[in-house]
Image (tube, rainbow, N blue to C red):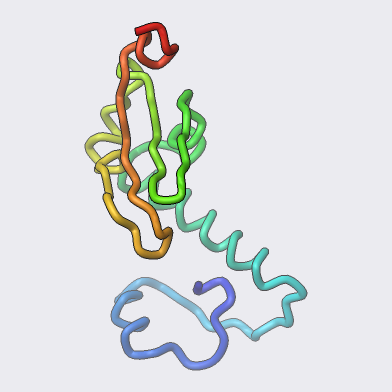
Amino acid sequence: MLAIWRGEMSKRAQELVGDAQTRVVPARQCQDDLHELTAGWYRAMRRWCRAYAGLRLRELIRRTGRIGITRTHVDLFLLANSVDIRIRRAGLDIDPGWLPWLGRVVSFHYLDKEEFDGRE
């Protein structure tokens, strides 16, 4: 959100930013605010992954797996032998359960090779 912030920052947002070094720059007219928002989130996610999980964003998202999506659920299926301790330590694969903003229950499933390949 900071990538496309316009106007004064609310007190709550100032509390979230805290003592982090921020600077005000002249607002520029963006032709595509969605692009600016996406770029800001991408930068923030890359930095967070490096700082708190010790891995690159690419290492987090480029993993072999399958996704099952229904009207009520999103299930992520990963190979049990592909568990990355950095991801586990950062809590990035803990089942979040119901996500109101997504309108679905999200779950992670770690399967052995036979289950993953459907040969069970």
